[in-house]
Length: 234
Image (tube, rainbow, N blue to C red; front, side):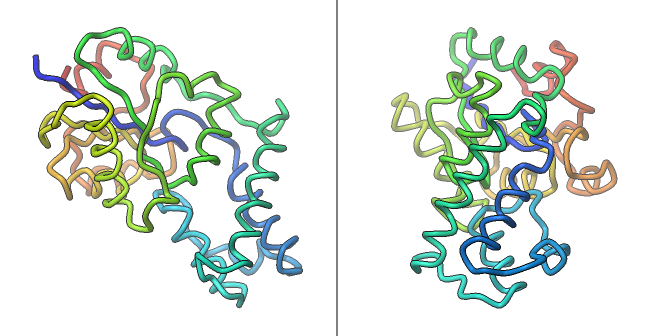
């Protein structure tokens, strides 16, 4: 078997954080920019499948503030967001839960020779680690592609593959990389590089949206370990 790289999304794929990211982001906009009723103004902003850079830009536009990624205001916003997210994820009642089968699958994959794991997420790297920490999942993912590295999720996928290649010394061909996610955006970023796409219907994308995106495999969740391993092509 050739060497395989499996790239996992986080929200709706490995964990459900019960809206912790959106709550912390809206709170950060309120604190940093002094805006009241942020959620009412940003209700239409899509979070699922988007990078945090795109989310911040869209939220900034919705509430009428400068969304310059390199600006002082956005830098303060990122700090406030991470502090709020860390606080919310530290509490059992607000951190959400790990999704069915996710710990068992990554444990199984981590034990298999020739299989390498990474993250592919729109989250800021610190935010990603904060979300995974309560569930002891960070230890499986030495690196990955994150939303702080590029606004375009397809470019984040490229970054994730390049980091894994640098770490392992393996030049992963497209067919040897698998993206596991819960939205049509995850499927699209896999397709952009010729990667295999495995979609999960336990997250934010509807089954109809996922079917239209035509992944290589569509699962309800990761609870059936043999079926999940088969879908990954391992």
